[in-house]
Amino acid sequence: MSALSSTRPEIIVVGASAGGLHAVEQVLGPLPFSFPVPIVVVQHRARESTDGYAAVLGERTPLPVCEIEDGEPLRAPGVYVAPPDYHVLVEPGRVVLSVDEPVSYSRPSIDVLFESAADAYGASVCAVLLTGANADGARGLARVKAAGGYAIVQDPSTAESPEMPTAGIAMAPVDRVLTLDRIARELLRRALP
Amino acid sequence: MDTKLPGSYARATPPGASAGAVSAAHLDGEYAGVTALERLEIDLLLDAVYRQYGHDFRSYAFPSLRRRLRKRLEGEALTTFTALTDRLLHDPESMNRLLRDMSVSVTGMFRDPTFFLALRQNVVPILRTYPFVRIWHAGCSTGEEVYALAILLEEEGLYDRSRIYATDMSADALDKAKAGIFPLSRMREYTVSYLRAGGTRSFSEYYTANYDAALFEPRLKRNVLFAQHNLATDTSFSEFNLILCRNVLIYFNRSLKERVYELFAHSLGPLGFLCLGHRESLRFTPAEAEYEELDAKERIYRRRR
Image 1 (cartoon, rainbow over the protein chains, first blue to last red):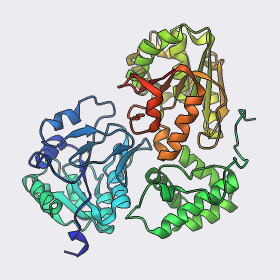
Image 2: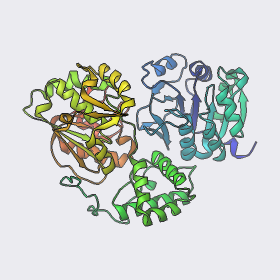
Image 3: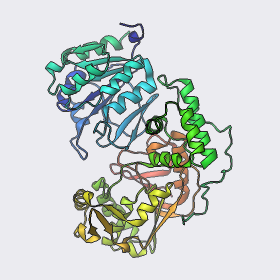
Image 4: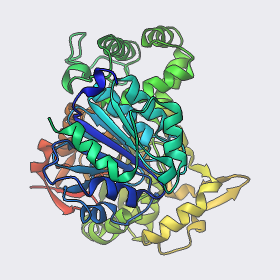
């Protein structure tokens, strides 16, 4: 493990696709309500979904969950969820939106989130890539690693859809491959002094 | 020939502009993952584009700007932003390509149908009390939303007394908007959205199909003035009852957003309406104090007296 990857994260970015709600819930559920690092989540969603994803997730974690508005300040504790049909990008201390074309066939795209988080926070990013049926997020994970950040991937053998985590492992020198129940523990380990 | 509105500075130097103007690099914080050298190169590129062509991207939001610039870099098969600046300065066609990249955004007819429904139900009844309705569609891109608005106004019996100013910084996009020809392949999706937006007729009545294109009825644009206007550099040109600016301001940094909200405030009559995109809000801006929320969910605001 390099010295850089012992940097305490200032932002955690999470990407999930097919099977995501359950997976994200497993990762965020065990975190304490005072978790000190803001978490931004891209969950692939249908373009006009009104499924109240943020509200549902909010019932399954002690952390406050909201759906991102353009320019939303990042606070901790807090979970910020990408709205359908917008890309989420990271600025120092805020998240902003874009409606540029889909990336890796997706909008919101995990690659876009991860890459912009790496730009804004460099080595202070911790990226988590979960279950999914396409390769969105693999390139983004590689960028996070290139910037000195930390990469956690869900163990593909336990993922509802293994393609996305598998692609992540193939493209990036990930730090941890973990089952869902271990990811929350790892996040706590990284986040607390 | 492009129509230029009073206050348009498309190629002139606006007052206050100088080589010492504060760039986006200093306004929005330190990007730990972007080298100082790259930020310098980007600043120089934006400055060069502004000074040579008059397009001002210097206050655009950095993350989406950088993404688009990197995409252009790859498209030009170059490796540094300095090389891109070189090409942009000496090859005007490459500037057109960059402009297309900077103008790209998703638009469709009746995208966010619930917004159009709210417009129909909550704003139109008030507009109906005015003898004339003046509407500014700011950042209209290729015009889909303008035609959607025209259709809505016609169905509500308001079109005849409406004047719509549809503006965009891109002459190319405006040409497409003026033509009113859109891919036939999108019509099914638009039909669904149209119905969900409260459409009262048959959507196919509004266009004629020809090969793979849908040509929209010319009568829908007879009260529409398409004109070039740049929100980053130009000033207010009239007073309106309703301004739509949806998913445009997301590409601007905080200070440019504030400038535009000021511009809108000066362009709205008292109790005039401002409509933003589905996930945009006045919430994190000083402009919030000048408006009240008419419909918080659909991002419809009303200028306070």
